[in-house]
Length: 212
Image (cartoon, rainbow, N blue to C red; front, side, top):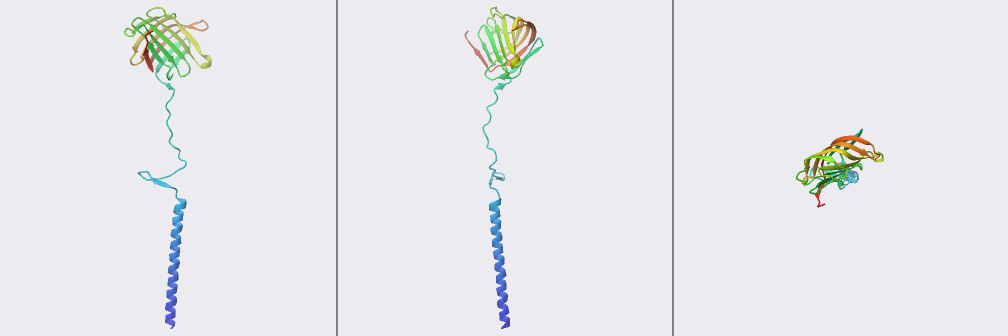
């Protein structure tokens, strides 16, 4: 009888231990599952690895259309002690306008500086190469005129070519290119004169032929 009682007690103890272990395992699995679902961030497959989703990640925005200033060549001149140096130009403000008898260059830097340069000669588009004499009145054949507004905005200086010489080294109406050397006497707004020289070599945004 005692043996039977011991067997029953042993079976009961074994069942209790097994049941406790099962409950502990179940509880542990639930805790692990809760930990995984609560603490791990959302992720998605990007084709190479699981990438964690980040709500603070910046969105890709549309790229800029570009600057309003271009590099189109160079204006490099010296008048007296002052430099007239353009290397960055305002967009849509630089153009060549030409006819059978004239070539006019409109130049505007990124800093509100302006140059207007005009050559006059019969059949100039075909026979553009050569030297031209300064003529502020723009009446003489085989002549050129030039006006300049340059310098810092609050201290800009105005110059007009009074006498001297310019030489067209290269001109292409198809490509909108112009290369010129200039040397002469420039008249300032206050009436004083200064010697100046330099060059202009540019690739203009547009080249337009007109009838006038």
